[in-house]
Image 1 (tube, helix red, strand yellow):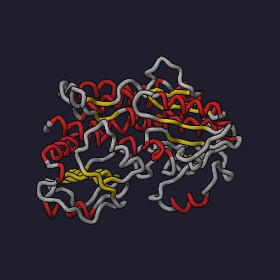
Image 2 (cartoon, helix red, strand yellow):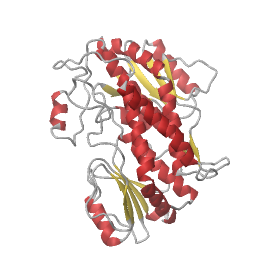
Image 3 (cartoon, helix red, strand yellow):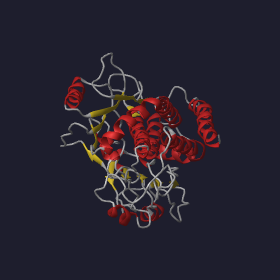
Image 4 (tube, one colour):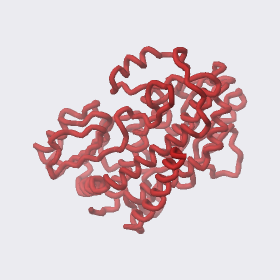
Amino acid sequence: MKSLTRRIVPAIVLSLVLPLLAQAHPQAPSAQAYFSLLEKGLHGIRAQMDSIVQSADSAAPLLVAGGHLYSGGPQVDFAAEAGGRSGGLMGMKSLAGANPVRGDVVLYARIGPPTEEDAQTLAKFKADGVYVVAFMPNTTDKILPCDALIDTGTSPGLPLSDGVDAKICPIDSIVNIAAMWTWTAELTAACTRHGKMPVLYQSYGMPNGRERDNKYEGQIFHSDMQVKPVPAQSLGNAYLDSIELSLKRITTQQMPAILTAAQWLHQSPKDQSQCWFIGHMFPAHFQDVRAPQPMQLMSSPIDGPAKVELGHDGFVLFVGYQQAPQKLVDQASADGFHLAYMSVTRATHDSSDNIRYIDPAWDLPDAAVRIEGYDIPVFPPSGVLDSAIYWAIVAQAHAGETP
């Protein structure tokens, strides 16, 4: 009963708090409105848990029997996030250039409504005996040729303006990613009910993480450890619980820093605005053609860039990972440009008026769920939460609102 209470209470709190916060500027796109819309999308995933479990139950015996698991589709950042990363399945392969065969499983994602090309691609998979799970809006009367459809909802994102060329801050792409990790959690549980524990990556940023992962390289299932069967819905709901709790932390504790970052972005010339990023989803996720592109996108070393070339009116948003960008913080303190940074660990000497730290509300291992008997926590929250903070800042800056 205690675990059930932990799951229900955050959802109730968020359902009450976020809509009220979003009403602060009901006519304008804003950070609060963005978080509120994203929360609705996450609720939509939880409402489909029975379908997610059913499809995971169907896929698990195929993989246990020797099938392969692929991810891909028109949403480029989907496959980039799904494979080869902390907390994810070591057996996940990219669909790009692959030729799935009978007994394989494909996770196929798109942003926006399905197209005729999608239908043809999925039909080809089905004809070849591939088990297909599609992640996209269920907005067509036609039955898509897939084994399961995880509906990402009717809202593509938060509208920033009206008209033919109106931009959005996307929701559907993040919901697809969150749904993929929820499905992955349920697949993992389903495999344990077939007597197999999938191998999942540990972050290289954790002690001995790289050595541990190298030990299991090329293995889909563990041969060196047994995990007792995990009940259906427990891991998927635990992942969504973690995301919702983190969003609550962000909206109740980090909004002042987010609003200030948005003000700085709004005031800074585009040629003096940079986003330095770390993460599997990026930069593809930020390059969504439906969204504004208010910053230059720059790939960062794990501990941040050594130096940036900006004037006094410049702005840097650092979408980081585990380590603080200490060199960047020190330069901002000395040079005076505005800096907002997110990373799990916080830099020292970052109290200057032109610097704001945004806690991304996920923990150092970048893994949201613990499985009894498994050696590491699994299923990463960072991509979902870092993306949400980025788009919340963009939405607020586009509105031109100030704290």
